[in-house]
Image 1 (cartoon, rainbow, N blue to C red):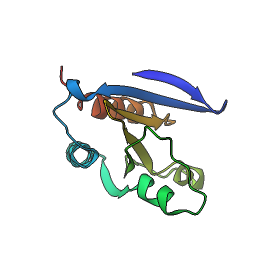
Image 2: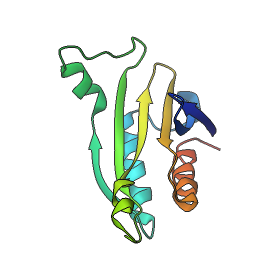
Image 3: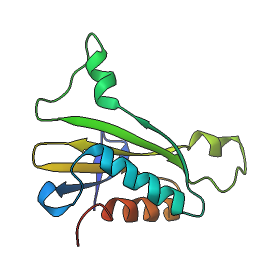
Image 4: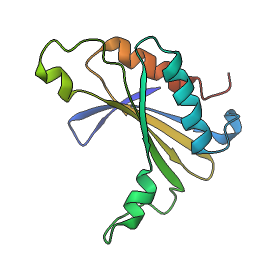
Length: 130
């Protein structure tokens, strides 16, 4: 799992998973897997899957890189407390999954809770065959 700076401000955790290194054949299969992992997590709550590719393609000026075949966001929450209104702004969380001909790219923006980051890393790493 790599940690990179995106647009100079955002810490992103990202992992490329070759299709030859996973049993998953589609983004939808990965979404189902992430949903199962979230439901198994003591504080996890599945919210939705957002079809980012379909949405962007439907826009008059939407741009999608030629080599991207599909892109969806898995939206969920790990919130275990609301100590003040600012905590609400940090939720929900999302894991992006982008499909290319030879790989899937899974990524998320760093959360302020280290336990949330660790769980999301585990979710993503569970997609790859070991």
